[in-house]
Image (cartoon, rainbow, N blue to C red; front, side, top):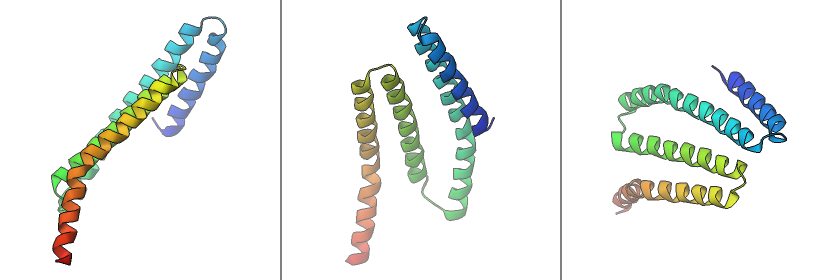
Length: 128
């Protein structure tokens, strides 16, 4: 599937959810959640191609595997946090969605600290 197919599936799900919302609001939320999960798992399936590309980049450029693993973890945290926050906001719980976004950002910051420290040590070695 391509982005066009996913876009069409999302639009159809939203149009159906809007139509159902007037009759049964809880079914509308379930339909939106199902469409979101479908798109989420399709996106996760695309990660296999990203993993292969990252391995090829690592072989060519000789990057430490820890850096690439950290980058992939950050991507996963971002994807899951945005997905979860979007569902919460769509359900009318914007405060919880915002808290999920903040926690995702803090998780990425905590995950990136060893890389930032290694970069600073490298820069300090050049300057000393």
